Amino acid sequence: MLTLEQNKLLTKVGPGTPMGELMRRYWQPVAPAAELEEAPVKEVRLLSEDLVLYKDRSGSYGLIGRFCAHRRVNLAYGIPEEHGLRCMYHGWLYDETGQCTEQPFEETVRPESRFKDKIKLPGYPVQEMGGILFAYLGPLPAPLLPKWEYLLMGDNVLREMFVSELPCNWLQCQENSLDPVHLEWLHGYYGSYVAERHGGPLASFKTGSGHKKIGFDVFEHGVIKRRVWGKTTEEDEPWKVGHPVLFPNILHNYAGQGRYFLQYRVPIDDENTWHLDYICYSLPPEVEAPPQESVPYQYVSPYNAQGRLRFEDVLSQDMMVWVAQGASMDRTQERLGESDVGIILFRKLLEEQMAIVEDGGDPMAVIRDPVKNDALAIPQEGRGYIPLTANMANGARPPSATTDLIMDLLAKASQVS
Ligand code: FES
Ligand SMILES: [Fe+2]
Image 1: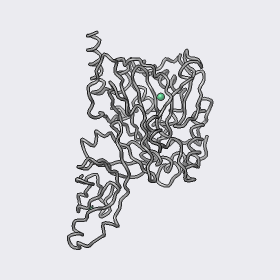
Image 2: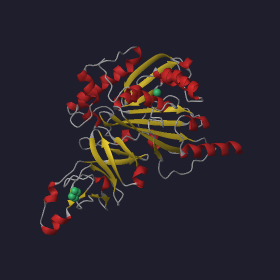
Image 3: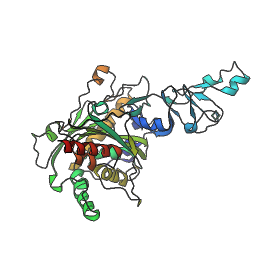
Image 4: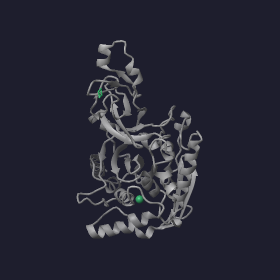
């Protein structure tokens, strides 16, 4: 249970708030790169700031304040130029730092005018990695964009991503990743109940495979989660190696059988989260992955056609409980038990790291050394190579062109062999 003040401290992400300042020390995903190929200007709300993301004709990305400094129109309707974004109303032009670089009428009537030099919108760096566009809203110089292995996985891999906008605070999503015991209940017992009511097979864990022991260790990039569950012992990888929550808002995991994933829980504002589920399918050697020019993406609503929260797969069950805790859950009323030691540890870690930022330091998992960034070693249970199976490719996510393609490739390979 937290005090109202503690709860606010952990959940408010606007500029100047301690959590907002902590979050601004990390690169945050803002859009699939492929989305900007379809439409080069996109409204973004990130950490309670209203922004527009654009790709100009030279191929550079910018993320600048959403409203033109002149008459405050929404620049989501602006025009990408060779360098920068031009306001469609009177033609003022902005570069990727948010600096105004042209004011056509002012310069016509007063060629000596330096008015534009005084006009600057917020402007933040953007970088692409693994088909995702990341932005950095913190003080410069920006740290390095972390080269998480899954973003750069090379050979014989197909990728895709699913984006969901969730009407809840980001911490509800992240705390769920520090709470292993929900697995056999939400994804097991509830999963079976859903199967009984709606017909299976639905992705679920066997109820009998419950946790016997859970453990959490802080490491350089976040928290390692460990467990003894089902038939495993402390000698098995789920305890010995575990898997990480990357600080502050990423889940890094391996679903087994060739499917790797990262989940980013990006705060839109205090009551909304931009959730990115990034998946790599490592194909078996007898199947050749065709080249992917860009990483495909889909927006997936957490709601079904009946307006109820979706529940058919593991991730939609997770989203269901995050949203079902309310827009910003009241932690002054919760009652934590033994299953919540990971959540308690994570909150403490957030408080410590907020204090480091307030003292002017770099918080944990901020990377500035390129050598280190080239060799990020992330403990991850279950890495031993087991080929991708049709069940894994098809079972746990909404249908997609990528999984259809993989199913085709796997089916053809099994006919040949
Ligand atoms: S409102 Fe943007 S140039 Fe006038
Ligand atoms: Fe879950």
